Image (tube, rainbow, N blue to C red):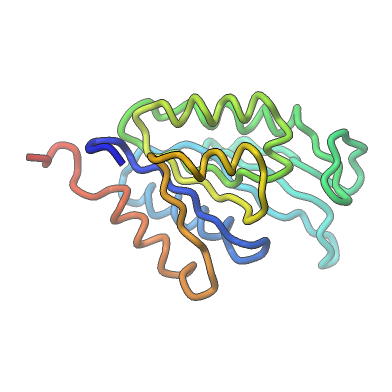
Length: 184
């Protein structure tokens, strides 16, 4: 990674390992530290203990339904119809700020989200800006995420049951480091 380049981290793990929980904890820690943040998280929608879909929520508080068993799609991912328009209404504006010196948290770069060409373009643009990026990513192969994982400016960290609880604090140290005003 080039000197002075903000960190670009992909948190890779299997479904259900806790990537979204980790992303929410990281966002809370960054906000407590006074770091400018942007981005979004995803979460399950459950009815009677049964997963019926997924919601997307921006740091700003904007929310939408990403996918649901009752949505027709296309696209469809497994049993879920994906609402790309609702996803893009929440996710795309969430990637635009902060401009410099902040951290953008993206949960996640998965099959549902990557079905949006506009989202893929926004991620590519985001990685060209002077902001740190932390994104959760599925373990499976996808042309877009495979290409990201090969970039020299991106570090891939594996999320496991053994590492997930300590990762938010470790990431804060890496992302915040020396405050910009105190650099020599």
